[in-house]
Image (tube, rainbow, N blue to C red; front, side, top):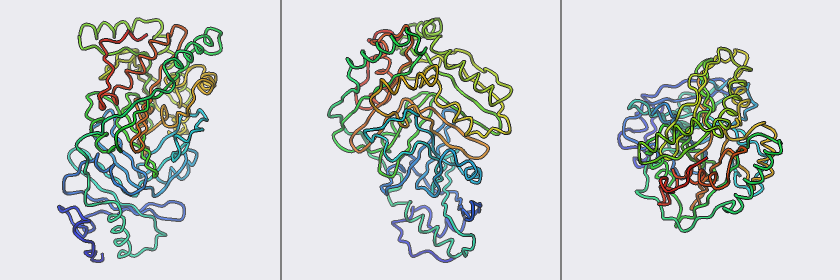
Length: 463
């Protein structure tokens, strides 16, 4: 390997030189069509703030992922290969890698360009990937070759990638978030009341049984947001949920902490959550437990939940064997709300690709409605914005494993503008005031950070 000491010390973490990295790293090589993907994996010596990696200033794809079931963190930078969900053959060739991506909510809307930069479906192999697991940090550097590259050229190209993606201020975040200047709701509260009332009338007419309608709140901040700081604070919330950030090269960042697993798999074993039905949390333990019990006994919420759980169970039976309901209509307690949750385990049939199952599941009635197509048409008729990745499917696939969440409890960040999304399941017994309050409280993970929390103990009961 050639001596690459011509890179200055300011471009290299002080605890580990580039020359040491190349000497101690392990190369692996993977075929992709007529090219070869070369991967250098290195055990990183030193401390790095994974959230600060999101502040890397070069325009590129950035990914942050922490599962609800693990403290492992994955961070990806750059895009070496970008594929769509339909490109199964090439996705299969990349099964040795972790590909970040997902599927937008299929509403066919985005006239305002809110989601410019994000494709309807995308799966990306980053050029650089960090893995933080059980006290160890691994760095992967990747490049594409024709398979005839020399060892010296390989090292030089790896050094260029290192120089491009490993800046001097590695992992640096700001101490605080900027103050909010103003907030606006879309639709307004009056517009929301009209929309929900119309949807309830349509349900009573028998046009469909359930629809999930959503809205957003825009926060204008005093100056641009430090994404690493936002993610640090979001990840510190004490609840069992996914933490994610997907940033497109233009700088738009879709971030959130979702409690809802859409699909996870290990080999042929799959897991799916069905979450629907909501109550607020109370500071009083007695009141909190009473409202959880009320949720489990509510005909309205049981109907709303069973539209989701029945759909999940029947769809799994079409693609899987040994379908088991691991948990039935139990309470999932988060920081601001509590939900009714059912969980399913199954064994995926060998002829079914995991992404085929993912595409079939998405969107579930938890974010769409029932029947599926009629509810999607209602959403298109009533909502005035494209959902994009909100209520979409987000996660990663890595050969024999994969983990995808539903993109709820989420926001779109662009410079100094934060757009927070929330939705509510509408059935025949829904009321506009209660559904407005439910969506307000669902936004609290973000509103908390800017001093706008809805006081849960002073709100009306969510039904």
